[in-house]
Length: 143
Image (cartoon, rainbow, N blue to C red; front, side, top):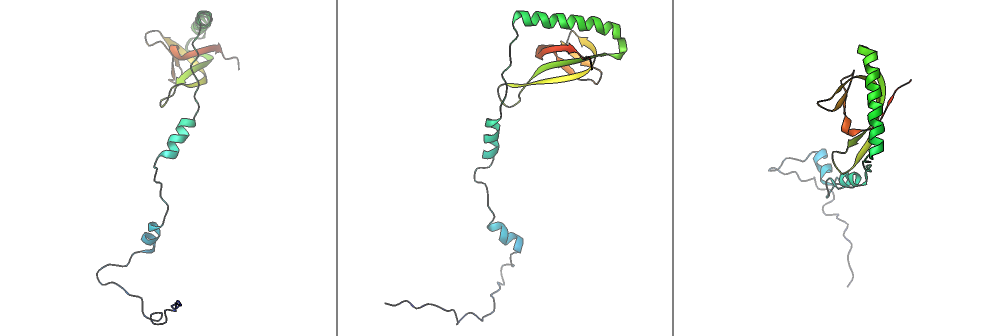
């Protein structure tokens, strides 16, 4: 048997059919039918979050805690001399990650106004507060 190729000559010049019941679809809607979609919504974000690195918090030993306390006492005595101007200091502290275990060490430089002993926080002139429990290192800023 031999196959006949259809040349569509019987319908090629007929007008395009238009439905009387259904309105014609816009080009935008027709294109949307063929646009790609993500079957795994959020999968790429989850992979990126898993791959994001965090640091583990270093626990200070007793000697380091004592040195930090001495630095803090020294800076507080200097703060009394500076008065309302504040004391320029640099603090390295740990910020826990909100989404996963660990976090990151950050450095903040600012003018220390006071130490809130009740809240255990360093209060700076721009209203920034850093918890004393998060402090890793502290030094007077000499810049």
